[in-house]
Amino acid sequence: MKSDLTPRQRLQQILQGITPDRPAASVWRHFYHRETSLENFVAAMVAFQKKFSWDFMKINPRAGYHAEDWGNSYEWSGDEFKKHRLLEPAVKSAADWEKLEILHPGTKVLEEHLKAISLIRRQVGADLPLFMTVFTPLSVARYLVGDNRTLLHHLLESPDKLLLGMEKITATFAIYADRIRDAGADGLFFATTHWASEDLLTFEQYRIFGRPFDLRVIKAAGDDSLNILHVCGSHNFLAQLADYPASMINWDACDPTNLPLDRAADIIPDKVIIGGLDHTGWLKFATPPEIGHEMAKLKEKMSGRKFIFGPGCTLDPEIPEANLRAVRDSLL
Image (cartoon, rainbow, N blue to C red; front, side, top):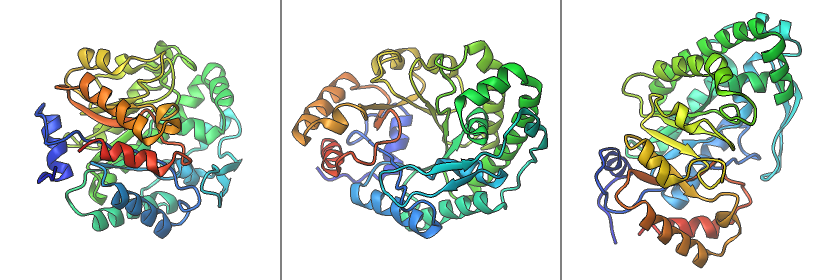
């Protein structure tokens, strides 16, 4: 079936609660071996989109871009399937939080990623919705210390110092969120990584160290920003964060500790739900015909709801392209 709708028109219909010509879908992954060069990164994002014609692009930069201009250093991977390795974090002690400065969007790595948005927009055209990945301030703080255990220690033993650092991180990415829109993104893909989860924090702790900073960054993107909230990990705080100013929400609904798709759709009917593709299960290990069967079941379950097919998190780059093609073909 040939469609006359552009991806932007299809997304707008879904946002309005109108059943479009066909279901929408998008997936995202890292290209570790190409994401340390501006030109190679842009080329990888654009080529992936052209190959599969997803209904929106989640720009998926190297995760460390949030922390590099503060001093994090990395050993870059030249392997498509291997992550970069942190060599030295910028924050080595709780006292270092007081030394952080507010970064300007023109600093080297942040500016490079603004350029990436502009270049991608120029190459994919106006009809493809683009969302730039931005981590929550608490997630950025975790990157700045290098591991979960250290950040939890600072949160419990030196909360005042950590909060000073959180203010600087938040101010930096509030400015950046506004510039992301100027560069050509429709909004933020705002990711909690693993920090909006009972696995690491109580929700009362997240109310102090997460929520107020999150809201400042999202609001800085503007009232017309078309945002996706990604609540990562197991035992997540999806229901508690569902009132964030984001039109769409994404999480791992295939994780048994999280809300399933249909129940979440009943609880938060005003949001477009993105999910359903079991990125650690059948999407990775099934055959293309089996994937077609799973897609058909999901279509039936989510029929009539504001829904977009997507993974629960960034894909393992080793997932076969034939499986991604099966997802795309199942939309028609």
